[in-house]
Length: 399
Ligand code: NZQ
Ligand code: ZN
Image 1: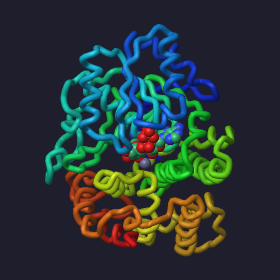
Image 2 (image 1 turned 30 degrees about the vertical axis):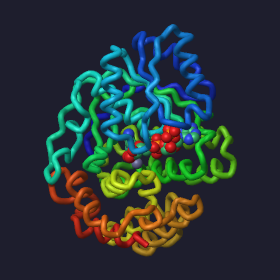
Image 3 (image 1 turned 90 degrees about the vertical axis):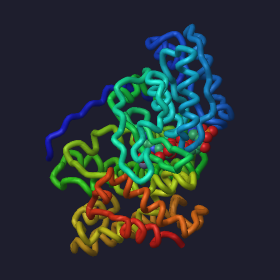
Image 4 (image 1 turned 180 degrees about the vertical axis):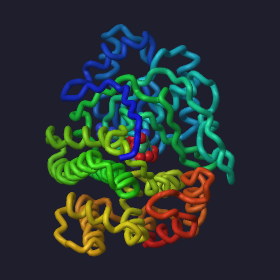
C-alpha cells in the first residue's frame, strides 16, 4: 500500500426525513443563503418548497438560483457567483444531482474571488495545458443530493463545462469540501429509470477506475471497493424494479458517496482514464455522464485488459462470481459480465445513438488527451492512452 493522506471534513447526516434539518444546519453558516438547484426536478417533486420552508423556519433569508443545467456551464456559474456576491450571501446550499452540487461549489468559488470560473479550468487556453488557478477560498457549501451518482455531495471536486470552447474539466481544492451533506434517500425516489441506471454506472466506474489502474497491494481498499461494486450491482436491480424501495435507494446513495470520497482509492494511486475520455463527450454533446461511461467501458477494457489481466480477472471473480482459473480468460469473462449488467440496466449503447457525429471523434480525442493528460500528451492508466488510442476506443463503440 502506498503512503497516503486522507481528508474528509464533510459532516454527513444520513436517513429518511433528514432533509427537514436543512434550516437548522444552514443556520450555523450565516443568515443569507443562495440555494442552487436545477431547472425542473426539484420544483416538480416539491422538495424545493420543503427546503425553502425549512430554511425560512430557521429564520434564514434565501435566494433561489434555479438555472443549473445538466453538465453545468461556466456562464451559468459566473451568473450565480455574481448574484451570491452582490447579495452578500454567507453560504451556498445545493439541492439536486451532481451538476447542481458541482455548480454550487463553483459558484461558492466565484462569489469570493470574483473571477470567471473558466480561469480555474484545465485547458482554458485552447491547445495548451494551462496551470490551474488554485482555489484558496470559497463560501461554505451545504449539499443535499437528489440523485445518487457522483459523490460530489462529500468530495472536493466540481466538473464544469466551458460551453463556448466545449471544454469540460474539473476543479478541486480543500475549500470545496461541503461543510455538511444531508443525504436523504427518499429524495431519490423520483429519479427516472434512465438517470437511476446512469448513476449506478457512474458509481461503478468510480470504483473500478482506481481498482484497475492503481497498485495491486492495497488490500483493505480492494475489499471495500469490491463490496461497494457488488452492492451497486445488486441494488441497481431493486431500485429499477421498485423505485421507492427505501433500503435499496439508501444502499445506492451511500455507495455513491463512499465510492468517491477517497476511502476506496486511498493508498493505491491509480487514475481515471474512462472519465478523461467521457468528459469531452458530455462537454461537446451534453450527453449523460454515466451513460457515456457505460458506452465507452467495454471498448476501453478490450483495448487494455491484456496489459493487466490479473486485475480484471480479480474483479470478475470477486464481483461477478467468475469461476475461470486462467487470468486472461477470467478477464474476458469479467468484461462480458460488465457488458451484460450494463445491458440489463439499460445503459449499453453507442456514441452514434447518443447523436454524436463520427467526424467529431478526432477533436474529442484531442480534447481528452489535452485536458485529461494535463500537458503530458497521454492519459495515464493501465496503458498510456494517446490520441490514436482514444480515437480507436471511440471508434470501437461508435456504431
Ligand atoms: O435538470 P434538473 O431539473 O435538475 O433534473 C435533473 C437532471 O435533468 C434530474 N434529477 C435530479 N434529481 C432528480 C431528478 N429527476 C427527478 N427526481 C430527482 N430526485 O436528473 C438529471 C441529471 O442530473 P445531473 O445532476 O446532471 O446528474 P448527475 O448527478 O449524474 O451529475 C452529472 C454531473 O456530475 C459530474 C458529471 O461530469 C456531470 O457534469 N461529475 C461530478 C463528479 C464530482 N463532483 O465528483 C464526479 C463525476 O465523475 C462526474 O464527472
Ligand atoms: Zn463519474
